Length: 44
Image (cartoon, rainbow, N blue to C red):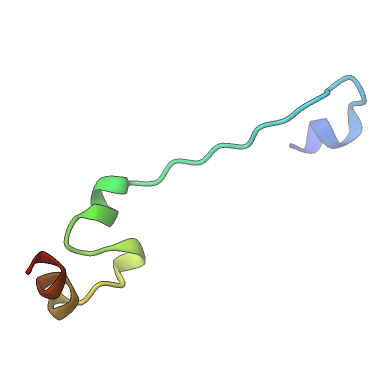
């Protein structure tokens, strides 16, 4: 990203990041924000 900021030859930049979606969809939720009660209610 730093090189692109000063190199005028570059026309486009894409930044990509990965996240463990299996953990989000499992019992913990995003950033471990889902409680056991919330998970149980969702499953019901």
